[in-house]
Length: 293
Ligand code: ATR
Image (cartoon, rainbow, N blue to C red):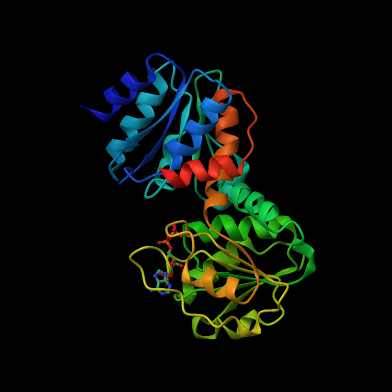
């Protein structure tokens, strides 16, 4: 069955949203939104839509969202977060700044607005997992300069970090991010060499991995945490597996460590609230349920 017809059949006339990507079978988003729908007794649906990485396929998605009266919007994941932007009616300021959209909300007038909630999710998971961490307390280190790094760097700068050390295998991409996200108030983003990633941990309050290293099927991230101060937080946004080699090392050294599931759960909150009109929170029960799927 055509995935659009399948989604409409599942929704049975109820308001709905969906996760859109290619591939999409393994996405955890239906589980996390399904939890909130049930918990709050909302008569709605959250499904999944495989959409090929082609302009025509994205145009079909946008046309479907426009003409379907019970469609409230969608989430976007790889590889659509950038290409979708040209097809929407509005892009909010944060999504424009980050340069990517992960959430589409249909406004009351039927127009489609693109937002980015990844940075919000990242900061909310950090606040939940490390409430003692303060942005202003000192330098932070971010590994990676891909799509995920853009949201992380933008949100850390916005949160007020005094210095951000950006480390990426391809230094040119890190320079691009540095140019895009350096604030105009004198705070710095310094570009560090990939082979010095262990040295630049000196004095840092936070280490974030946004690279795909440590992800299932990828090589582990090789880094020596010896120079990282004991009080520093280690955050790996990889969510499969949850305990990456980096987090195992951080736990063994007694660092406060944060896995990638929190960011995934929290980034879903603003979309859910916009589509279904219900404020939601992240809980241990939801986490366990999402992990069980
Ligand atoms: P995402 O959107 O998830 O951030 P991405 O845009 O493909 O994905 O970015 C992947 C990141 O992981 C990049 O920072 C990439 O480094 P390069 O810019 O040098 O490609 C990093 N990465 C992937 N494989 C890597 C490897 N084997 N060693 C070091 N960094 C790696």
